[in-house]
Image: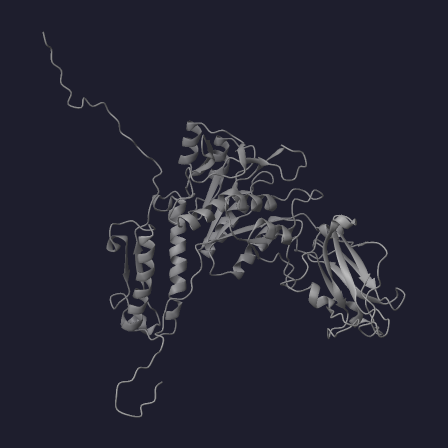
Amino acid sequence: MVTLSRPGVYVDESAFPTYVSSTPGTASAAFVGWTPRGPVDPATGYGKPTIVTSWKDFTAKYGGFEKQFPPSDLHLAVYCYFSAGGTAAVIVRTLPVQTAESKATVATVTFADSNTSGVQPTLQVNAISPGAWGDNIWIDILNGKADPATGVINTFYLRVKYQGSSPINQVEQWGPMTMDPTGATVGGTQNAEYAPDVINSSFTGSHYINVVDVGKQNSTPTPPPQNIPAATSQSTPLVNGTDGAAITFQDQQIALQQLDKYPDQPFVINMPGLATGGPPNFTDIGNVIAYAQNRGDGFVVLDCPQGYGPSDMVNTFVNNIPASAQAAVYYPQVIIADPYSPVQGRTRLVPPGGFVVGLYMATDHNRGVAKAPAGLGTTLLGAYGLETTLTNDDQGLLTQSNVNCIISVPGSGVVLWGARTLSPYLVTRYVSVERSLIYLSTQMVAMTKFAVFEPNDWILWNSIGSVLNQFLMAFWQSGGLSGTSASEAYYIICDNTNNTPQSIQQGIVNVEVGVALEYPAEFVVIKIGQWAGGQSTSITS
């Protein structure tokens, strides 16, 4: 504030407050399912929701197509997701965590103190997550340089090998490190850091292991930094990692509920294997759809089972699952090059969910949430063909039953040829319409949180109306709403007509918003007839 010391005109610069809060994106992709490895919440033992931004990022955290494990439906779905143009996704690993007997266990090995001839344990190395995959980790311990002044070796290196003990299997090397928690300078000119701090770092640490300083738990530990683990003459494997009991839907539900840690983020959810691991369990599918509905901002992409014909999809599948506006199903399965096979040219059938969710995200980014994710621009990159070639009659049967067809179009490849939800009502029939409603409601909730605890009067009502008008105007101008003018596209009521003295005394602000959403052109009808064109004829002689 300026100081007023003499008569005159003063300028006081200040930023006017703004009520537009930061808002989430249109939606995030979420994949939930079993995978051999992946992040786990240490506090609960459940799969930890983890954001991955590329296929390389995913494989660093969850592993690649490793031949010693059964093919992972989640791996295949995420692989197809990034092939289709997906940019980021939240992954939740499903684990059997119901009882102590069924839990997956962590592979581990303990190394002894170099100064006690193998008697005193000092460093425990664990796989970074539970599962039998950890038994494929091998560890080398190497001595660091001796301190020139004393000749004592107080530092060490640790090498991590995966899927074998040969040098070509090395995936990480850490060091020089010390077992001194103070991270003091040791080994002459070497500046070594405390091993657990280096390897266990959540930002720059190992993708394969974490370590525990067990020397602290001993009654007579060797004082640091002399308590480094003894160098190994050959690679030492981690042992006793297990996958636990077979995954049940109860485990799947627990993993799905981990998305509740993101209460304000809308999700497009795919659960690989939900409908493809055997005869579909329609109760389980209904529970997943119910989860999305209870969240209010979830949308489920359902996979079709393998081996189902068009009539089976209608009579056996669709007729037994909830007719929800927050779910869509796609058919048939897709043929891709088999990433699990070393044989060149071998193919594999995969559910379409990964491709579909990727195209949802790509369409959101390129065209906006109001554009239906279907048509000639939705080519499934990496798709070689389809399990079933659909005739026109097949497409008619499936479309009228709200099953979205996947077809092969000459010149465009394999494309999505449907954009319907499972809703029986016209107003929420289309994927783009329902997802636009989710997007608008999520954005408007985020934008109006500033109003909580503000004085409930006309100033607040005008502020809310101004914020929402700015947002809806931009959405309409981008093509998200229909109408030739803003008044035809939307309206906002937040004034004394819907905020009465009674509602004000109850602490309530009422806001009414109406929007005219865009509907996709699902059927293009061309009427053609013969026209004489004003022709005239004459006969001459």
